[in-house]
Length: 174
Image (cartoon, rainbow, N blue to C red):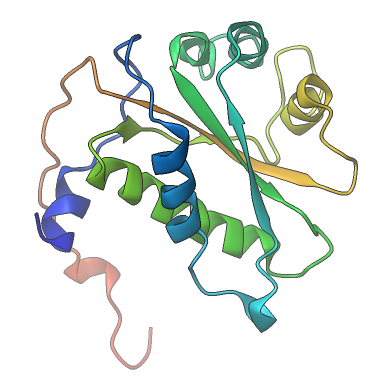
């Protein structure tokens, strides 16, 4: 499938087949390629935490009543982390990496979604990032951008509809 077709077909999926996980070697390969995006000064301030422990996934599922509930049933979850949140571009670089990751997972036959953590509040009033860091003993000098649950899709989502972008494109000046 060509790149444009892949972008068009990739959709956020929240239900996954429980008995199908990605192997460690394939996952390391995908994470390597996800990390190859642009990086200011080649610093690559992005790291990953791979999560498949059932109890820890339940802890993530409890962050928000609706937005994270399905995490308990996701076969695997990747937390996208900034290892140097004082680096001015860590958020942009982690976002690019997470975007590459979603496309690479799709290309490998897996579906995923994005759960924003940075700047979100948990239902208990704490910062969602604080909850994630506490659950996994993530050091204070790291930041959590998002969670990417993934697996083999167990739901069908309607195809993306084409839309005319011309009203959002400004040529030469606004």
